[in-house]
Length: 143
Image (cartoon, rainbow, N blue to C red; front, side, top):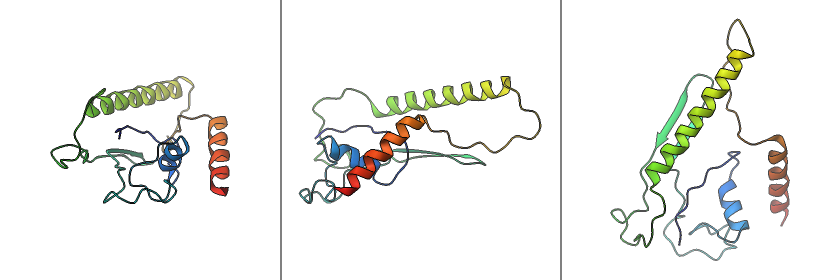
């Protein structure tokens, strides 16, 4: 078993579960996307460690501690650690902040006087990427 950090692009239901299964590595305990084979664990081993939800009025950020650690469950004993979760999350936050600042700077340079419209969540993916993802998900749903 390997613990990985996944970052969804679209927020579509089951996105991470579908993609992990499609590449041959379903999430431990995911009965649905393991083709009904993985029913042993007491829960699906999927956890939202950090959520960032931009709304028109405010930015909502929530962090829930990693439950897959030895102190919470003695079955989780790491054999090798390549990256520390807290450091990786902070790097991602810094990249998102930098991107947001660059976008705000570009908006200010391009003009736009008057009242500011509420900011919408901007997807890091291109329209082409989104279309390919939606096509892939549609094909997956038909199987």
